[in-house]
Length: 389
Image (cartoon, rainbow, N blue to C red):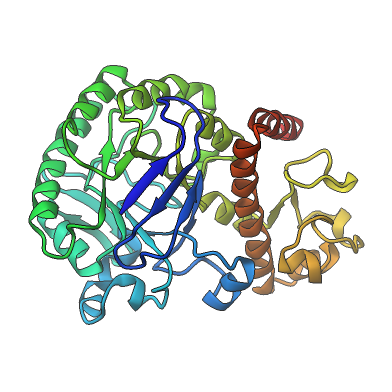
């Protein structure tokens, strides 16, 4: 696995390329990149056939331990988890927690992490985790870590998070380096420390001198829908401090349902990879993203709620300039009807639009970085979301 960036700066927006993946060497991914959020290897409400109609590009998929933990035995009979879920053409990134589900706090142990699966609580040690990773053979994965912190965490809780994560990293790294099947996979270190500058510094020091593919800036939230409401000003100093400690040539990842305004701020600070759990939450609320739309109906909002009565007789698409399957074939009135008749198709059509919209957003981010208009795009996005407050 290889990550290259055209801009060697510590805390600034940058373009990059993720390439030379061992399993699918012909795939090249441009960053900043949106990784597609999955549950048990499937994008919610979207089949593989539909995904291929949303985008012809091979997107990076995120899989989380809580949704895949029980797959180990059948996966071992296949080449990899990508093959097992029928997505062998797509690169896969394995994360510890599900970004769409709030962490149930207080259950991590001294040398183990608590996962909440469909079958209840599961405790996993570093060696058990690495056994699972060797069975799954993901293209990228992060080290086991204790990310059970947020802005309200005590100093004691933060200290334990850093100490436990360090021990887990050391064990995971040893297994990674001695593994016959993981040597060329991308290993990312998980940086913990809550909102403590001192703790973040100690966490980064854990990785000094190690040849990692990149870093996950973890422990800023406990996942779930509340992440989108976190103000960028509350995380800005922590992110800036952390990134300034990291090597310029390594990937930087931030998972969770950050809203588009926070995303572009994080891109501006040099974060490279995000996940699309935000699009999933918007869909579950029967909303459609419109922050990229330029036509008058959506001019004053970043999203619309298709459940509102005013859309019952609105025979325009969600967005006139959108090229997604939903906007090209269906109206707001039809989506409103599907919502009130509780048809499953409503979520399918909204997920198609919201996923397309978010992918288009990252495409615009990359294009603006290439053309030197990134700050103009950032200003426009801030304007859209300030009107929605």
